[in-house]
Image (cartoon, rainbow, N blue to C red; front, side, top):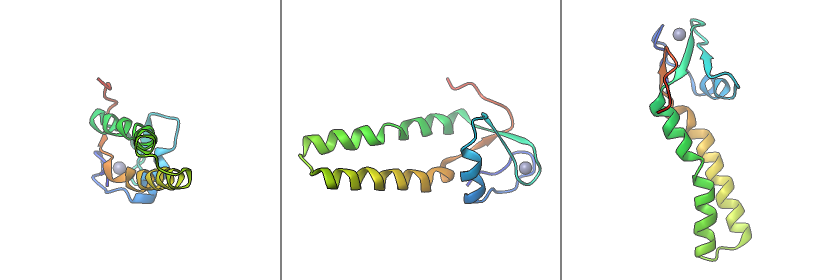
Length: 99
Ligand SMILES: [Zn+2]
């Protein structure tokens, strides 16, 4: 779970999850109100998860998996991604360039 770099308080899963869905690049710490940004490392890691669903589609085409099973696989992958997302977040006090 991410820890605020200003007040060193650990964010809860719910807080992190809620903060992740803002259009703003920065997330305000629920404890001290300071702006926190995702580190470039965690942003890069998160962008890889986007490829998981096309990968499942590809695998299901190769192995001729039924449509129902394909949908179940995609849904469970999406749920796992949502649930585990806050665990992979690292915070930084300034915005880092992606590359
Ligand atoms: Zn804080």
